[in-house]
Length: 354
Image (cartoon, rainbow, N blue to C red; front, side):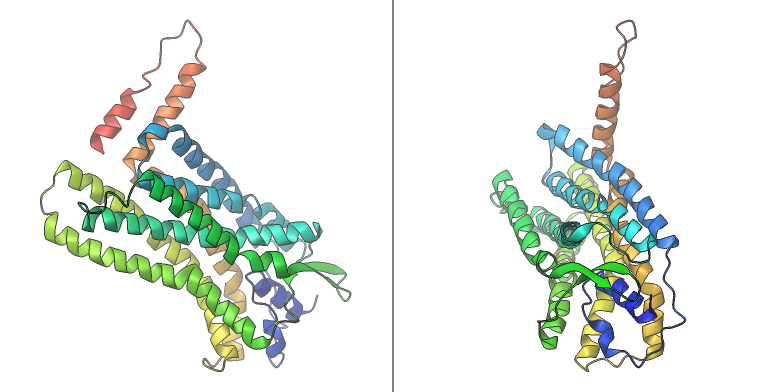
């Protein structure tokens, strides 16, 4: 496989389209992809993400009477992550086979559609969680009518519909391409009929709606929240502690999401600007991005398995629910002669600390 084609496959993975046709003057002959390291990382993320997000979804589903608004968003965030990580074995095998896609056109479209759906749904869920905390803390008295279960359900429906709509280009344009020179089939975007100017617009539009604008909205919410916290929460009342703890969890989720996804969106934006002659790109800089981009992709995917560990580490409420469910399961499977397990002691203790 020619170096330029390999490069194209790697960047097309995140919809970089026909990028490399404009950089034929650069020599990428010394660049080789990580055919062994990247698949191992994908499978590790798959195992951790499948187990961790599965526990989160099960915990949120079982704790129906004790759900907070944040728990509902966390459950949907875990659902988006879970739907994505189940596709990682396909991408791991695709990379390990030298970017040969043997799974057909349908799986090519669906698996990439799920990648983009996860990206949009995750950032929109985090944005709604941040806005919910903004209403609860900054407008605690006047926002009760806006923070009902009905409004939360409507927000979630809107999140999934908008995310599905924004990810639609993957279903429309993603397809398999045969390469006679290397006797392989790639899973890539086919925008041969789309004008070049529209491609740059799609890059910028995707990064703006999938990262930049939601992240700015979150920062605005946290700016107002920070001012309110400094102004009013000087005493360590129990309710204040609970709000601070939940705020800390959501803030950590946002920071981790930004750290994981920012490099990929930065690369997309730089190339879009370079195509518009607004950002000069040298061959040396391109070579650096070629070496770093596969690991930027892994970093973005890593976010889907980090969230459950953040909940378990930071959220006493979530951790107590998990412990309750685990002890309840042990009790149900205990023999009649065995003494009953203390199902709710851990729950009550942890909840009292909440």
